[in-house]
Image 1 (tube, helix red, strand yellow):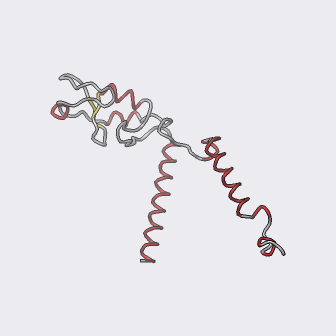
Image 2: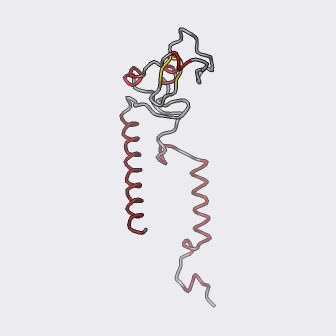
Length: 149
């Protein structure tokens, strides 16, 4: 009596157990031999480019009333009377020196990950592509929802 797979003319490498083993091997290889260039993981928060100088210059200073009984979330020091501070567009406030030092290394708010623009064209193109992809997926989901609901 022929096996189930022989009757269906299924090759050995197409059998479910072989496929599962291959998929498992590939998954582990991707996890443990992770190479960002190979798998397209171009961005993570440890390797983002610094914020654009023009974006840093646009940051405004908060009023002193906003600083009373608050502390800088980077250095964890209380704001003093003559301290200079800056407002991020996300409304988080930090000491000017602390924030400028932070933004020289990365382009996002240390609390909420709000991103400022950078001078790195490739990074900005990548962010735009991610935004476009998400927009396309949202449009498809909305179209699908309108068709099947």
